[in-house]
Image (cartoon, rainbow, N blue to C red; front, top):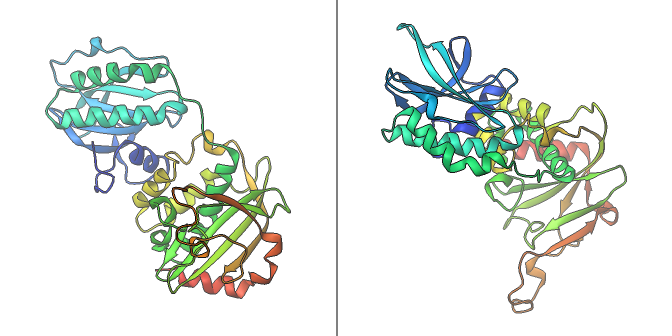
Length: 338
């Protein structure tokens, strides 16, 4: 299995790159990305099905018999012939995931297969062992956990990221939230937290933890609030914004990794694109002394022993005196550019 920090893409990263047209090499006219593992007839390849489905192509040796393999209701097992070089067509074991809800499971299947092939197993044996191990998961697709507020939150962050990338293709380096950082965007001593609520006039935002509205030591923190309206055929979707930021970044594969860390392994996934949005209003605030917040520095060190994971609501309607104007917003964006 590939390391997320490795230059060689893993399954989810590869499919995401293929969906936006990145780093593909043709195999029989099909865009593919070679995996780090090779069989006797070349590398195992990540590819997409005719409708963008996640797909894994395993080159078969002359003696390998794929008839021991059995698919599942959402997993097709087939054989195809593709020309990948000058030595004529090669027979491939063709695995296609037909259900987007199962793609995360199929990615684990693909990574395990690639790992086994890389350790010397034959392609058929590697696929057979792995599919049997994961068969129960392949038969029972997980229920979606992508809520509309979660989609809106990612749309807000991607909208900011797109604006920054329009200024510099290196700006993806400032998107720190998916890596577990305290704030969504960080550069030097400047930090930005992004919040999105559904509906115009909704000014109450959820704050997660006692440090989310604590400014960096000796630095500056701002909060950008988007009021988003869910509308049919709206201009803002995870798909449109995700493709835009991947295509604009100096290292698109790193943005794919950040999206995956944020929980979105496929920007075109149905769960992430059930809703489209438009911006009804946006307001930028500077978080400083007297801003309505609760941070750990306000509490006595021994006030709440054993208490963690604190969440609370802030009504930004009472924070009007902390608003910043458009010129100040532009200055903030400049500070977040590498």
